[in-house]
Amino acid sequence: MAERSLLQRFDQAGPLTWLLAVAAGWALLLWIAALLGMGGRVAEAKPATDEAALPQPRPATPDRIGPLAQYAEAAARPLFTQDRRPRSFLATAPEGDGAAQSQSLDFILTGVLISPQVRLAVLQPSGGGEAQRVHVGKSPEGAAGWRLVEVQPRRAIFEGAGGQSALDLRTFGDAGAPPGGATPVPPPPPPVATASPPPPPARPAAAEEPQDQEARIEAIRKRIEARRAQLRAGQNGSSAPASSTQPPKP
Image (spheres, rainbow, N blue to C red):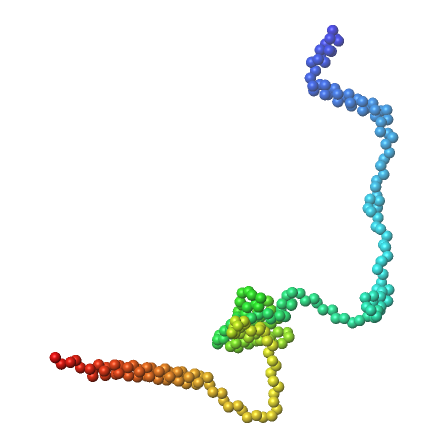
């Protein structure tokens, strides 16, 4: 009867009961193994020192280039000269495209404006492009090395690092081709030591212009009077024969 009641209890046991039984069995096995000396032969690990953990620096190597004094012979006898003798040279900065453009005045003068308030020149690139207006004292775009210093009725004078250069106003001749561009301004003549009589005062252009205009008006008036005289003579000649012929009497 006791065996049957024990078997019935095993059959009626739930999952929790079996789980607790397995845990108790493992605990019993570990206790028995500990009594038998399990883990007693494991040696204690030595603590790692900081010096062993860090990488050791490499020994310093000598400089392969060496001091500058050992190259004195190479400087005294350069390799890339024919006579193996040092030569003096001047180091200059390379000129880029912007510096080359600033030194050239490659423009055509297409117009000028001279007034009490504004003095400017109208420039156009020789290779073609949009025209630009340059005031006196300013530099044109693309030629920063040149500055407009003077504007004349048919000329514009620029000043740069190499001196002055003048642009003549573009005019088309018989063949329809414009003249050349920039022409260098000749230097002023040296002063003459000998005294010379002062030149006669130039006749003002304003006085000549009214006289020319009066002469043209007088010539036109004379032509008109001559034409009127011809018309009167023609009318008198045609009326005289008409008055001399009378109709016949009946």
